[in-house]
Image 1: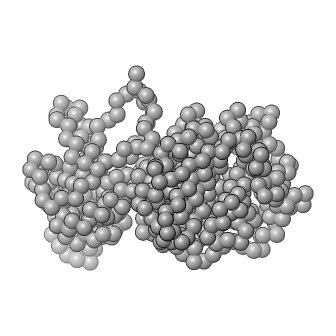
Image 2: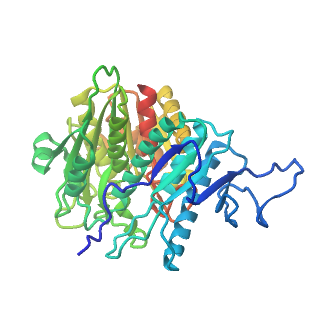
Length: 484
C-alpha cells in the first residue's frame, strides 16, 4: 500500500540552461506589459490579446509558444511572480491533457528575454521551483506535474545562477515540508530525527533527549514539554568549514503543536498550530543549504522541540522556571511558550559555542501579525549592522523584513518581582517578547525574526501556496553568505 505521507524533502523540478530550442517540446514566452505612458499597439498572438501583466499566463494557439506569461514592468520580483504562475498553468494543462487521454509531457522550454540578468533569472527560478509546490497526505497517486524546465538563453553563465537559486528554493520547500507535516506524525522526536536524516553529509547532528535536558537544566523546554506524552528534544546542527573566520548561531522555535497549554487557545485557529515550528524548520533547512553551497562561514543551529499540551503535568501560570544558566522566569501565560524554549537554547548556544552573531527565528507573537500583516517579517536587533544585513539579505531573495524598535522604556517591564524576568510583561506584545529574549543573549550582536505573520498563508500569491510558506529560510542562507 502506498505511504500517504509526502516525501521529506520534496523533490523539486529540474531547471536546465540550454542554448537552443528543442523540437517538439512545449514552449513558453515571457513578455513585459506596455508602459502606461507609452502608446503602442497591443501584442496579439493568434488572435489572443496579451496583457503582459505580471503573473498573467495566457494559452495561445501554437505559434512557437503554447503559453505567454506576463512580466509586468520587468522588475526582478515580477519574474518570480511570472515563473510561479507559469508553472501552475503548465501543471494544470498537463493534468487536463492526461484527463483527456493525451500524452503526458514532462518538460517545457522557456525562452528568456535578452534583457534578463542574473537577478532576474534568480527570481524566475525561485518562482518556477516553488510555485508548483504541493503537500497532501493522500493514498491516491500524485497529480502529474512538469519535471523539467529548459531555460533557453545565449548566456551559459546562468547555469551557476540557477544552481544557487535551486539551493535556496530547496531550503524554502524543506521548511514547508516540515511545517506542513500534521502533528499526529510530527512529534518532537520525529522533527529531531528528520532533521538528522535530511541535514546532509557536511552537517553534524546531535539529538538531545529529555534526560539530557533535565541534567543540563533546560527548565524552559522541560516546562513547555511537560504536559505532553511526547517528550521534548533539542537538535544541535553544526557546519564547520575549514578556514571559516566567523561563527553564526541560529536558533529556531520548534513547537510541534501548540494548544496554548493551560492558557488554552480558541478552537477556531488551533489546527494551524502544526506550523508553530516554522522557525525551527527554517533553521534546519537553512543550515542544510548553507552546507550544500559550501559557504565559508561556521554555523551552529539549535532547535528546541516540544509539544505544548494540556494535562496534569502541564506547567502553570504563576510558576517560576529556571532556565539553562540559572536565570529564572515568572510564567504569566502558558501560551507564551516559544520564548521559554528559545531562552534555554539562546543561553546554551552562546555559552557553549561562543558565536560572533546570534539570530533566532520564531512564530512568536500575534502582535506581529497585527503590526505587519501576513507578508512581512518583524525584525528586532541589538546591532544595526546585523539588522541591515538581514534586511538586505531578504531583499535579494524575495523576503521582506521591517525593523521594529527595542523600546528601552519597556525593558523595565521585563524585570521580575518573584523571579529574574517576567514571561509576559505589560506593553506591546512583539516588543516585550523581543526584550525578554534579549535578556538571554549576553550582549552579543543579535537579531530576532518574528515570522508569525508570513510563516503561513491561506491563499496563493507570487511563489507562495496555501499552508506553510517557508518564509525566513532563504534570508538565513543569504545572511550567512553575506557574513562569509
